[in-house]
Length: 377
Image (tube, rainbow, N blue to C red):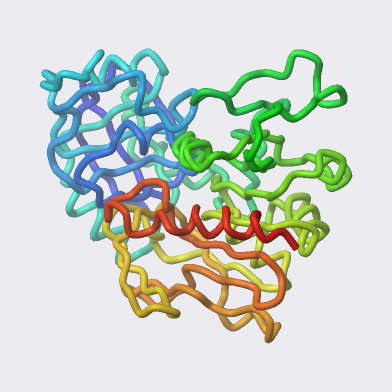
């Protein structure tokens, strides 16, 4: 079935849909991972985006019910060079096409993904429209231009949990009696962690649970008074989509919580920490998305191979506070990848330590959070 991908600058790619009829629009980005398409599709950080996989053959190991990073597909569309319709893996429960169809997510194959990726690298990530129904290139280009800009867009409100949830045995559980009557489970030695859900990946919560944490998920707009009343040992700030500068309510909550308890942020959580500390953020030309991003730990000199998915970055020069120390940098473009406060228990990283492409390069960050909670304030 013929399908057209039209970019806002007028560039047109013609391919085939492997999921039937459909139409969507959003920011088109690329991911350099060779595998992990299921995790990528369900990562809330991809909300509002159409993902292009640079690896040419996608779908060969199918889909299973265990490797989800959220409760649904978050990406607007999946774009590949060649779709493999017959998966071969002992864990596979359904094909990628069937999974996309069941969630009404378009899948496009047969375009030159190398050309698309190169175009994005040269011109920057941009808005696009994909359709099997409207095959008029000029009309699709206009639809791409009329779609929302990522700058200034608050997508956190689309992916955050609607009510507080207790993470238990690898899944989120609704609170039976609501938050007002909530009591932390009696688990001797367990650290009570409030996780602010800006679009959290399940594997982050699994990683914290393995470290002995009891985790309560709060919606992104939860107020500081609620956190104070819950009195957790630590506060975790999750990943998420969109422009961090648009999530001003989260910035204000974080600013209120700094210094009250140990704080750890990942990805969007890191960017929000930067804003709460008085810094600024900016949009990267084409973002960092993939499982092979080299990051240098400035304290140890070690280089970590990291998994990343972000289109915005904290501006190093905007962090003027002498008590804030830059801890990690990206070796591809020297952008900020981590910061730590010298006087209070606070640190954050731009990359995803739970994804483990290294495979264990960055797991020490969860241990650092545990050690901070052990020491307290």
